[in-house]
Image (cartoon, rainbow, N blue to C red; front, side, top):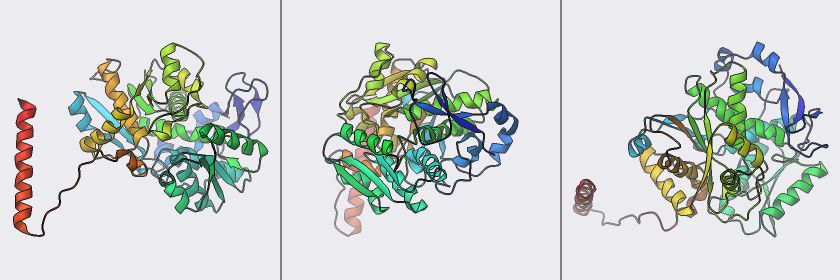
Length: 422
Protein backbone atom coordinates (compact mmCIF):
# COMPACT_ATOMS: atom_id res chain seq x y z
CA UNK A 1 0.00 0.00 0.00
CA UNK A 2 1.62 3.31 -1.09
CA UNK A 3 1.74 6.08 1.50
CA UNK A 4 3.12 8.86 -0.73
CA UNK A 5 0.97 11.98 -1.09
CA UNK A 6 3.13 13.74 -3.70
CA UNK A 7 6.06 16.13 -3.62
CA UNK A 8 6.62 19.12 -1.35
CA UNK A 9 8.98 22.08 -1.50
CA UNK A 10 11.47 21.93 1.36
CA UNK A 11 11.45 25.72 1.70
CA UNK A 12 8.01 27.16 0.95
CA UNK A 13 5.92 24.01 1.38
CA UNK A 14 4.26 24.20 -2.07
CA UNK A 15 2.73 20.84 -3.07
CA UNK A 16 3.20 19.00 -6.39
CA UNK A 17 1.89 15.72 -7.77
CA UNK A 18 4.31 12.83 -8.11
CA UNK A 19 6.30 13.36 -11.29
CA UNK A 20 9.86 13.78 -12.58
CA UNK A 21 10.46 17.27 -11.17
CA UNK A 22 12.93 18.29 -8.48
CA UNK A 23 12.81 22.11 -8.20
CA UNK A 24 9.99 24.30 -6.89
CA UNK A 25 8.49 26.62 -9.51
CA UNK A 26 7.89 29.32 -6.89
CA UNK A 27 11.07 29.59 -4.83
CA UNK A 28 13.42 27.27 -6.79
CA UNK A 29 14.20 25.21 -3.69
CA UNK A 30 14.52 21.40 -3.90
CA UNK A 31 11.47 19.18 -3.68
CA UNK A 32 11.12 16.15 -1.40
CA UNK A 33 8.69 13.24 -1.19
CA UNK A 34 5.73 13.80 1.15
CA UNK A 35 4.15 10.91 3.09
CA UNK A 36 0.89 10.34 4.91
CA UNK A 37 2.55 10.09 8.33
CA UNK A 38 -0.67 9.15 10.13
CA UNK A 39 -1.26 6.20 7.81
CA UNK A 40 2.37 5.15 8.23
CA UNK A 41 2.03 5.13 12.02
CA UNK A 42 -0.99 2.86 11.71
CA UNK A 43 0.67 0.42 9.30
CA UNK A 44 4.42 0.31 9.99
CA UNK A 45 5.93 -1.38 13.02
CA UNK A 46 9.17 -3.03 14.05
CA UNK A 47 7.52 -6.39 13.47
CA UNK A 48 6.35 -5.52 9.94
CA UNK A 49 9.84 -4.31 9.03
CA UNK A 50 11.57 -7.36 10.52
CA UNK A 51 9.26 -9.60 8.47
CA UNK A 52 10.56 -8.01 5.26
CA UNK A 53 13.32 -9.22 2.95
CA UNK A 54 17.04 -8.90 3.82
CA UNK A 55 17.42 -5.82 1.63
CA UNK A 56 16.49 -2.15 1.74
CA UNK A 57 13.03 -3.17 0.51
CA UNK A 58 12.15 -4.29 4.06
CA UNK A 59 11.43 -0.54 4.42
CA UNK A 60 9.26 -0.49 1.30
CA UNK A 61 6.36 1.29 3.05
CA UNK A 62 8.71 4.18 3.79
CA UNK A 63 9.94 4.43 0.19
CA UNK A 64 8.26 6.33 -2.68
CA UNK A 65 7.11 3.47 -4.93
CA UNK A 66 3.52 2.64 -5.84
CA UNK A 67 4.38 -0.74 -7.38
CA UNK A 68 6.59 -3.59 -6.23
CA UNK A 69 10.25 -3.07 -7.18
CA UNK A 70 11.61 -5.12 -10.08
CA UNK A 71 15.33 -4.23 -10.06
CA UNK A 72 17.91 -3.81 -7.31
CA UNK A 73 16.11 -6.38 -5.17
CA UNK A 74 19.27 -7.27 -3.21
CA UNK A 75 20.43 -3.71 -2.54
CA UNK A 76 21.03 -2.64 1.04
CA UNK A 77 20.88 -4.57 4.33
CA UNK A 78 24.68 -4.43 4.53
CA UNK A 79 26.61 -5.46 7.66
CA UNK A 80 27.13 -3.26 10.69
CA UNK A 81 30.53 -4.49 11.93
CA UNK A 82 31.79 -3.95 15.45
CA UNK A 83 35.20 -2.34 14.85
CA UNK A 84 37.26 -3.88 17.66
CA UNK A 85 40.53 -2.97 15.94
CA UNK A 86 39.62 0.72 15.79
CA UNK A 87 38.35 0.61 19.38
CA UNK A 88 41.69 -0.76 20.56
CA UNK A 89 43.77 1.64 18.45
CA UNK A 90 41.81 4.72 19.54
CA UNK A 91 40.91 3.72 23.09
CA UNK A 92 37.15 3.75 22.44
CA UNK A 93 34.28 1.72 23.87
CA UNK A 94 31.93 1.24 20.90
CA UNK A 95 32.70 1.85 17.23
CA UNK A 96 30.76 0.35 14.34
CA UNK A 97 31.35 0.29 10.59
CA UNK A 98 28.30 0.52 8.34
CA UNK A 99 29.84 -1.47 5.51
CA UNK A 100 28.45 -0.61 2.08
CA UNK A 101 31.55 -2.05 0.41
CA UNK A 102 29.39 -5.17 -0.06
CA UNK A 103 26.22 -3.43 -1.28
CA UNK A 104 24.59 -5.10 -4.30
CA UNK A 105 25.12 -4.94 -7.21
CA UNK A 106 28.07 -2.53 -7.58
CA UNK A 107 29.67 -2.52 -4.10
CA UNK A 108 28.85 1.02 -3.03
CA UNK A 109 26.28 3.09 -1.18
CA UNK A 110 25.06 4.40 -4.56
CA UNK A 111 23.15 1.15 -5.04
CA UNK A 112 20.67 2.37 -2.41
CA UNK A 113 19.75 5.61 -4.12
CA UNK A 114 19.94 4.25 -7.63
CA UNK A 115 17.73 1.24 -6.94
CA UNK A 116 14.93 3.50 -5.69
CA UNK A 117 15.38 6.01 -8.52
CA UNK A 118 15.41 3.40 -11.29
CA UNK A 119 12.30 1.65 -10.00
CA UNK A 120 10.57 5.03 -9.84
CA UNK A 121 11.72 5.81 -13.38
CA UNK A 122 10.07 2.58 -14.55
CA UNK A 123 6.84 3.56 -12.80
CA UNK A 124 6.92 6.98 -14.49
CA UNK A 125 7.39 5.39 -17.91
CA UNK A 126 10.99 6.34 -18.70
CA UNK A 127 12.81 4.15 -21.18
CA UNK A 128 16.34 5.59 -20.96
CA UNK A 129 18.54 6.23 -17.91
CA UNK A 130 21.40 8.70 -17.50
CA UNK A 131 23.71 10.38 -14.99
CA UNK A 132 26.90 12.38 -14.70
CA UNK A 133 29.51 10.47 -12.75
CA UNK A 134 33.12 10.03 -11.71
CA UNK A 135 32.79 6.41 -10.66
CA UNK A 136 30.38 4.74 -8.25
CA UNK A 137 27.17 6.37 -9.46
CA UNK A 138 27.82 5.41 -13.09
CA UNK A 139 28.73 1.83 -12.18
CA UNK A 140 25.59 1.43 -10.09
CA UNK A 141 23.26 2.98 -12.64
CA UNK A 142 24.69 0.84 -15.44
CA UNK A 143 24.11 -2.35 -13.44
CA UNK A 144 20.52 -1.42 -12.56
CA UNK A 145 19.73 -0.28 -16.09
CA UNK A 146 21.11 -3.53 -17.52
CA UNK A 147 18.90 -5.49 -15.10
CA UNK A 148 15.89 -3.46 -16.24
CA UNK A 149 16.79 -3.84 -19.92
CA UNK A 150 17.12 -0.07 -20.37
CA UNK A 151 19.74 1.93 -22.28
CA UNK A 152 22.08 3.86 -20.00
CA UNK A 153 24.22 6.93 -20.65
CA UNK A 154 27.00 7.97 -18.28
CA UNK A 155 28.49 11.41 -18.92
CA UNK A 156 32.02 11.95 -17.59
CA UNK A 157 34.79 14.58 -17.82
CA UNK A 158 37.05 13.81 -20.78
CA UNK A 159 40.13 13.38 -18.56
CA UNK A 160 38.56 10.83 -16.20
CA UNK A 161 40.43 7.55 -15.74
CA UNK A 162 38.03 5.05 -17.32
CA UNK A 163 39.18 2.28 -14.97
CA UNK A 164 36.92 4.00 -12.41
CA UNK A 165 33.96 3.15 -14.67
CA UNK A 166 34.90 -0.42 -15.56
CA UNK A 167 31.61 -1.61 -14.05
CA UNK A 168 29.60 0.75 -16.23
CA UNK A 169 31.44 -0.31 -19.36
CA UNK A 170 31.14 -4.04 -18.70
CA UNK A 171 27.39 -3.58 -18.06
CA UNK A 172 27.01 -2.04 -21.51
CA UNK A 173 26.48 1.60 -20.58
CA UNK A 174 27.35 4.23 -23.16
CA UNK A 175 30.05 6.24 -21.42
CA UNK A 176 30.33 9.66 -23.05
CA UNK A 177 33.40 11.83 -22.47
CA UNK A 178 32.61 15.54 -22.23
CA UNK A 179 35.31 18.09 -23.04
CA UNK A 180 35.52 20.20 -19.91
CA UNK A 181 35.31 19.86 -16.14
CA UNK A 182 32.67 18.18 -13.99
CA UNK A 183 30.86 21.56 -14.01
CA UNK A 184 30.24 21.23 -17.75
CA UNK A 185 29.14 17.62 -17.25
CA UNK A 186 26.63 18.71 -14.60
CA UNK A 187 25.31 21.52 -16.80
CA UNK A 188 24.78 19.16 -19.73
CA UNK A 189 23.02 16.63 -17.48
CA UNK A 190 20.71 19.41 -16.24
CA UNK A 191 19.80 20.32 -19.81
CA UNK A 192 19.16 16.65 -20.64
CA UNK A 193 16.93 16.28 -17.56
CA UNK A 194 14.98 19.42 -18.48
CA UNK A 195 14.45 18.04 -21.98
CA UNK A 196 12.45 15.22 -20.39
CA UNK A 197 13.60 12.27 -22.48
CA UNK A 198 16.09 10.83 -20.01
CA UNK A 199 15.59 9.83 -16.40
CA UNK A 200 18.68 11.52 -14.95
CA UNK A 201 18.67 9.77 -11.60
CA UNK A 202 20.32 12.51 -9.54
CA UNK A 203 18.44 15.40 -11.18
CA UNK A 204 14.85 15.08 -12.41
CA UNK A 205 14.48 11.97 -10.21
CA UNK A 206 16.36 13.47 -7.27
CA UNK A 207 13.44 13.53 -4.76
CA UNK A 208 13.12 9.74 -5.14
CA UNK A 209 16.89 9.19 -5.34
CA UNK A 210 17.33 10.92 -1.97
CA UNK A 211 14.76 8.61 -0.36
CA UNK A 212 17.08 5.68 -0.96
CA UNK A 213 19.67 7.30 1.30
CA UNK A 214 17.27 7.03 4.27
CA UNK A 215 17.76 3.28 4.30
CA UNK A 216 21.36 3.76 5.47
CA UNK A 217 19.94 5.31 8.66
CA UNK A 218 17.08 2.81 8.94
CA UNK A 219 19.50 -0.12 8.90
CA UNK A 220 21.84 1.45 11.45
CA UNK A 221 18.98 1.94 13.91
CA UNK A 222 17.55 -1.54 13.40
CA UNK A 223 20.93 -3.29 13.51
CA UNK A 224 21.81 -1.50 16.75
CA UNK A 225 18.74 -3.03 18.34
CA UNK A 226 16.29 -0.24 17.48
CA UNK A 227 18.34 2.58 18.95
CA UNK A 228 20.30 5.55 17.64
CA UNK A 229 24.06 5.89 18.05
CA UNK A 230 25.61 8.95 19.67
CA UNK A 231 27.48 9.89 16.48
CA UNK A 232 27.42 9.06 12.77
CA UNK A 233 30.36 10.08 10.55
CA UNK A 234 29.84 9.84 6.78
CA UNK A 235 31.71 10.95 3.66
CA UNK A 236 30.00 13.88 1.97
CA UNK A 237 30.09 14.89 -1.69
CA UNK A 238 26.72 16.13 -2.91
CA UNK A 239 25.30 15.93 0.62
CA UNK A 240 22.63 13.34 -0.20
CA UNK A 241 23.77 10.66 2.25
CA UNK A 242 24.04 12.97 5.25
CA UNK A 243 20.69 14.57 4.45
CA UNK A 244 19.17 11.10 4.04
CA UNK A 245 20.55 9.86 7.36
CA UNK A 246 19.03 12.85 9.18
CA UNK A 247 15.70 12.38 7.38
CA UNK A 248 15.71 8.65 8.11
CA UNK A 249 16.39 9.00 11.83
CA UNK A 250 13.71 11.68 12.19
CA UNK A 251 11.18 9.51 10.36
CA UNK A 252 11.90 6.54 12.62
CA UNK A 253 11.47 8.77 15.68
CA UNK A 254 8.18 10.25 14.39
CA UNK A 255 6.82 6.74 13.80
CA UNK A 256 7.81 5.63 17.31
CA UNK A 257 10.20 2.96 15.98
CA UNK A 258 13.12 4.33 18.04
CA UNK A 259 13.31 6.44 21.16
CA UNK A 260 14.27 10.08 20.52
CA UNK A 261 17.86 10.54 21.60
CA UNK A 262 20.67 12.89 20.56
CA UNK A 263 22.59 11.66 17.52
CA UNK A 264 25.19 14.01 16.11
CA UNK A 265 25.90 13.87 12.37
CA UNK A 266 29.40 14.66 11.13
CA UNK A 267 30.53 15.30 7.54
CA UNK A 268 33.87 14.06 6.19
CA UNK A 269 35.37 15.76 3.15
CA UNK A 270 38.75 16.05 1.45
CA UNK A 271 40.76 19.26 1.87
CA UNK A 272 40.83 19.59 -1.90
CA UNK A 273 37.02 19.78 -2.08
CA UNK A 274 35.30 20.80 1.14
CA UNK A 275 32.57 23.39 0.49
CA UNK A 276 30.31 21.95 3.21
CA UNK A 277 33.11 21.98 5.78
CA UNK A 278 33.85 25.61 4.97
CA UNK A 279 30.20 26.59 5.39
CA UNK A 280 29.99 24.83 8.76
CA UNK A 281 33.26 26.35 10.01
CA UNK A 282 32.26 29.83 8.81
CA UNK A 283 28.80 29.63 10.35
CA UNK A 284 27.36 30.36 6.90
CA UNK A 285 24.04 29.31 5.42
CA UNK A 286 25.53 29.50 1.91
CA UNK A 287 27.61 26.65 0.48
CA UNK A 288 30.00 28.28 -1.97
CA UNK A 289 31.27 26.25 -4.91
CA UNK A 290 34.90 25.19 -5.23
CA UNK A 291 37.07 23.58 -7.90
CA UNK A 292 37.75 19.98 -6.78
CA UNK A 293 41.40 18.94 -6.39
CA UNK A 294 41.52 15.60 -4.60
CA UNK A 295 42.03 11.89 -5.20
CA UNK A 296 38.69 11.23 -3.46
CA UNK A 297 36.76 11.57 -6.71
CA UNK A 298 33.51 10.09 -5.44
CA UNK A 299 33.11 12.97 -2.97
CA UNK A 300 34.74 15.61 -5.18
CA UNK A 301 31.56 17.63 -5.73
CA UNK A 302 32.37 21.31 -5.97
CA UNK A 303 28.72 22.47 -6.02
CA UNK A 304 26.81 20.01 -3.83
CA UNK A 305 23.11 19.87 -4.68
CA UNK A 306 22.13 18.94 -1.13
CA UNK A 307 24.81 21.11 0.45
CA UNK A 308 22.52 23.45 2.33
CA UNK A 309 20.39 20.57 3.59
CA UNK A 310 23.53 18.79 4.78
CA UNK A 311 24.73 21.91 6.62
CA UNK A 312 21.30 22.29 8.23
CA UNK A 313 21.32 18.64 9.34
CA UNK A 314 24.78 19.03 10.85
CA UNK A 315 23.71 22.10 12.81
CA UNK A 316 20.33 20.70 13.84
CA UNK A 317 22.01 17.57 15.20
CA UNK A 318 24.78 19.56 16.92
CA UNK A 319 27.32 17.79 14.72
CA UNK A 320 30.43 19.01 12.94
CA UNK A 321 32.35 18.80 9.67
CA UNK A 322 36.05 18.27 9.01
CA UNK A 323 38.29 17.89 5.97
CA UNK A 324 41.43 15.78 5.76
CA UNK A 325 44.32 15.74 3.31
CA UNK A 326 44.74 13.21 0.52
CA UNK A 327 47.73 11.85 2.44
CA UNK A 328 45.54 11.30 5.53
CA UNK A 329 42.91 9.62 3.36
CA UNK A 330 45.39 7.20 1.77
CA UNK A 331 46.84 6.38 5.19
CA UNK A 332 43.31 5.65 6.45
CA UNK A 333 42.69 3.22 3.56
CA UNK A 334 45.55 1.03 4.76
CA UNK A 335 44.82 1.56 8.44
CA UNK A 336 41.21 0.39 8.10
CA UNK A 337 42.20 -2.60 5.99
CA UNK A 338 44.84 -3.74 8.50
CA UNK A 339 42.68 -3.07 11.56
CA UNK A 340 39.37 -4.47 10.32
CA UNK A 341 39.93 -6.29 7.02
CA UNK A 342 37.68 -3.80 5.23
CA UNK A 343 39.05 -2.35 1.99
CA UNK A 344 37.38 0.92 1.14
CA UNK A 345 38.13 3.68 -1.34
CA UNK A 346 39.21 7.25 -0.57
CA UNK A 347 35.63 8.39 0.15
CA UNK A 348 35.02 5.81 2.88
CA UNK A 349 38.54 6.32 4.22
CA UNK A 350 37.86 10.03 4.66
CA UNK A 351 35.20 9.15 7.26
CA UNK A 352 37.73 7.02 9.16
CA UNK A 353 40.33 9.81 9.14
CA UNK A 354 37.77 12.41 10.21
CA UNK A 355 36.52 10.20 13.06
CA UNK A 356 40.06 10.09 14.43
CA UNK A 357 40.25 13.89 14.07
CA UNK A 358 36.96 14.34 15.95
CA UNK A 359 38.25 12.13 18.76
CA UNK A 360 41.40 14.25 18.98
CA UNK A 361 39.24 17.39 19.12
CA UNK A 362 37.10 15.74 21.86
CA UNK A 363 33.95 16.31 19.81
CA UNK A 364 33.52 12.55 20.17
CA UNK A 365 34.13 11.05 23.60
CA UNK A 366 35.77 7.58 23.90
CA UNK A 367 32.80 6.10 25.80
CA UNK A 368 30.22 7.09 23.15
CA UNK A 369 28.71 4.93 20.41
CA UNK A 370 30.02 5.88 16.96
CA UNK A 371 29.00 4.61 13.51
CA UNK A 372 31.37 5.27 10.60
CA UNK A 373 29.91 5.11 7.09
CA UNK A 374 32.16 3.08 4.77
CA UNK A 375 30.50 3.82 1.48
CA UNK A 376 32.33 1.96 -1.26
CA UNK A 377 34.76 -0.81 -2.17
CA UNK A 378 38.40 0.11 -2.78
CA UNK A 379 39.06 -1.92 -5.92
CA UNK A 380 37.78 0.73 -8.33
CA UNK A 381 40.22 3.30 -6.94
CA UNK A 382 43.24 1.04 -6.42
CA UNK A 383 45.43 3.25 -8.64
CA UNK A 384 45.35 5.88 -5.89
CA UNK A 385 47.50 3.50 -3.81
CA UNK A 386 50.23 3.29 -6.45
CA UNK A 387 53.66 3.47 -4.84
CA UNK A 388 52.29 3.03 -1.30
CA UNK A 389 52.08 -0.76 -1.16
CA UNK A 390 54.95 -3.03 -0.21
CA UNK A 391 56.69 -4.77 -3.11
CA UNK A 392 56.20 -8.55 -2.75
CA UNK A 393 59.29 -10.70 -2.10
CA UNK A 394 60.59 -13.06 -4.78
CA UNK A 395 62.32 -16.31 -3.79
CA UNK A 396 63.48 -19.52 -5.45
CA UNK A 397 61.07 -22.50 -5.52
CA UNK A 398 62.60 -24.45 -2.63
CA UNK A 399 61.91 -24.94 1.08
CA UNK A 400 65.24 -23.56 2.25
CA UNK A 401 64.53 -20.17 0.66
CA UNK A 402 60.99 -20.22 2.02
CA UNK A 403 62.23 -21.02 5.55
CA UNK A 404 64.85 -18.26 5.30
CA UNK A 405 62.21 -15.76 4.21
CA UNK A 406 59.82 -16.72 7.03
CA UNK A 407 62.64 -16.62 9.62
CA UNK A 408 63.60 -13.14 8.45
CA UNK A 409 59.98 -12.06 8.79
CA UNK A 410 59.88 -13.35 12.38
CA UNK A 411 63.08 -11.47 13.21
CA UNK A 412 61.77 -8.24 11.69
CA UNK A 413 58.47 -8.61 13.56
CA UNK A 414 60.24 -9.19 16.89
CA UNK A 415 62.49 -6.17 16.30
CA UNK A 416 59.48 -4.00 15.49
CA UNK A 417 57.64 -5.12 18.64
CA UNK A 418 60.69 -4.34 20.81
CA UNK A 419 60.98 -0.92 19.20
CA UNK A 420 57.27 -0.22 19.66
CA UNK A 421 57.35 -1.02 23.38
CA UNK A 422 60.68 0.68 24.14
